[in-house]
Amino acid sequence: MCGIVGYIGNNEKKSLLLNGLKELEYRGYDSAGISVLENGELHTFKAVGKLKNLEHKCEGFESSGFGLGIGHTRWATHGKPTEINAHPHIGHYSNVVHNGIIENYQSIKESLQKQGCVFYSQTDTEVIVHLFESYMAQTNDSFSAFKKTIADLKGAYAILLITQKSPNTIYYAKNGSPLIIGKSADAKGIFFASSDAPLIGLASEVCYLEDNAIGKMDLESFNQLSNIKPLKGDKLSAQKEGFTFFMEKEIYEQHKVLLETMMGRVSEEGFTLCELESLNLDSFNSITLCACGTSYHASLAGSYLLERIAKLKTKVEIASEFRYKEPILHNNELFIVISQSGETADTLEALKLAKQKGITTLGICNVDNSSIVRESDYSLLTRAGIEKGVASTKAFATQVMLLWILANFLAQKRGILNKDSIKSEANTMFQASKATQVDKKLHERIKRLSRRYLHGHGFFFIGRDIFYPLALEGALKLKEISYLHAEGYPGGEMKHGPIALADLGLFCVALMPQNLLYDKIKSNVEELSARDAMICALSAEYYEGCDDWIKIPHYSHYMIEFFAMMVVLQIFALEVALHLGNDVDMPRNLAKSVTVE
Image (tube, rainbow, N blue to C red; front, top):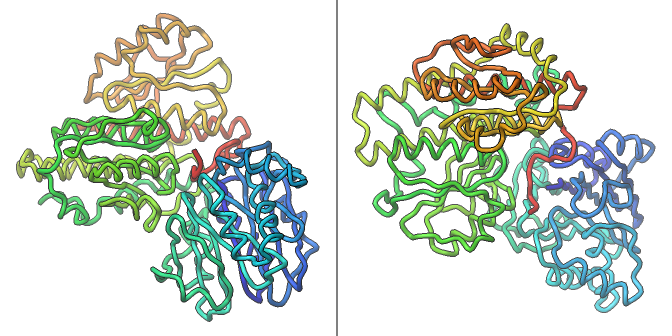
């Protein structure tokens, strides 16, 4: 899930590479490095930690005139975050950066060591550059050596390689990890990146490489690529706009992006998903949702809505486990994968498996032209916009909203909803989006309250029905950025084991909606309160057994309460983490786009 960039041209290469890596730092920030090939010489700089450390490392270096450059920001898989393990990895006359995992690196490494090759890092990536130079010794042809190298690799990869033997060329390969090539409007610069963001403002046209792509690129080669597209967008939406943290900004803009998600899709006259108009609804009678992490929690929430509203049997699979269970798939099911980035490796592989079995697939994603969008038979975009905070907020909100829209669209198509039901559901959606608009007084209340939740031995987040996946997501948000132990549970499961942990050191965040199973969740909270757990209740009505109460407004529907409580949980996690002094935008050990298994 690392990020890579590359450049061919006459502009100053260090600043271009560093600026590109800044746009990708959300993908990993254990270490970073750049390499510039200019006038026949390789200049390589690497540093541990965030990108500013690399900037200090190479602040005295400047490059001018024609040259090549590659850069990398790392999320560690093989080997600890050290300077030796940082990319680019260095051979005698070549450098390489890589995103992904080389599954057979150990056997390649042992074979090269028998030939006398010396390895310095603990990474899988280092075998690439040594294997390339081994083939170069045999062929003395750079592209032939590179193709032989890639043919030997098993796993997922996006690779950029530069070598003194070909000072005008960057060699590239892509399989299972994203890689984009762009060209400047004046055709005097070629750019490589793991996503669109580093290319905006630099490239006018791009090519999203498909799996198994392998090639070489110089200033004259771009137009030989297929499926070249114009690059649209700007970086304004990626700026903090006065907020201290991206995560906070993204929490505050959820009501806007939810309206974007609904635009053209939701009205009192009906639900419209133009992308699915050709979908034959008679061809399936069940749905499988498959995702990881936050998207998995959105899928769980969606399963309640799809069964309740569309009356379709729905199961939810964790993508990282799915294909190893030898899953049984039927031709009469719709297989839906959900991913914020559209590059989540486990989810992408699950999608490919479903396609191999001939199952109709639908991708729900935030990034157009991503791998999942391109691979799926049908796709729906969440329209969340750029999400820079590693801990997802608005991506989750828009995923749940889009699944809610999908449930109503399917119910409408199947003749389940009448005109009054359609009008009611549409109005409820608009109210739900409005409920995510942050009340600054409430934010201040949560900020003050959160100071009481910095100790103890852990958190239980509990909810029932669709508030159970929201409890899971609330717990995940807290542990991602605060590093405190937190678990989400269905309220009714407390008595089946977890309640053994209840004591004075346990915090319980209870989701208590007025419009759905209130008496049931109240009983579960009372069971925890009786065992001395500290109760923080989220509800419209005061619950006498709580120690703290976070009041949400009275609403007429449980889904409006769902979205209102979602915002409270996000702000609660944010403020606890800030009181503990953590970087909420770049929490330790995590990365935004998980492109490795």
